[in-house]
Image (cartoon, rainbow, N blue to C red):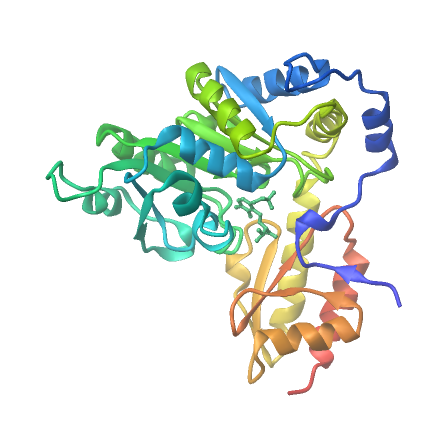
Length: 341
Ligand code: TLP
């Protein structure tokens, strides 16, 4: 039985040309600062995001957590949406690694307005933690892969900065946001002090993320990368995959978005399925099957070779990526339509 894996866009396998780029890349020792391919990637990413410098790290989690550590002091407070990845999927790391509190904002699809940020700011009263960092996420994972409109994000970030906050963008899927909105990575990054991006999601690399920001900030990130155990040696092999993907795999992200829409449209014709096709902005589809908990839907689908993950007790998440074709989407939709409650 062949498998259709829609659990995440992290499941992709490297292509042969990507592997060729990895095995022929010139290597050094990145802890000693002389891996030429890592240096090339960091310079390229910094330029792409319009920042002074960038630091290559193994994962999106480490990108976010080194950034949080570099922006804050223990006891500080982060302001972010209640559905943020840094809250739900990073093992409590802001508390464990940076000793910070998190104050959450509510809002549709992972987004909020300048007034929400103003309302969450602490005054300088001695009782309170210090509001230090605003974290935004684009695309927003638990928001269903939603894309921030540039002007809304601009208003939110401007307000945060006027209030004296630093602003970090979790851009694990910034490439998808750009493919969907037509805005450039630099358009979004220019609104923020720091940005994390991933190469191991829609871009199809086996490993790798980066943090970008000003030079002094990136020097601190590099130090925390070492502290958190993420400084690697001949990591040019991994950086080569990222350089390859940035050049060859960004333009094709719209195919993933088309496939997500195709899945949602097929499912909207199935009477037992609840799906909002208007909410498909990038490569994620959230849907529910009436009368069946999401874990059971996923189990039934797995028996048919279709893999998805429960997003909550009722909602299932399907994510499209490089390894998924339109025919696979049709087959997955067919299996979902055959589930009987
Ligand atoms: N997201 C993963 C899981 O952790 C949920 C996924 O399958 O979607 N920021 C955002 C917005 C992310 O979606 C992710 C990964 C990360 C950070 C962390 O990246 P990694 O997995 O490389 O640590």
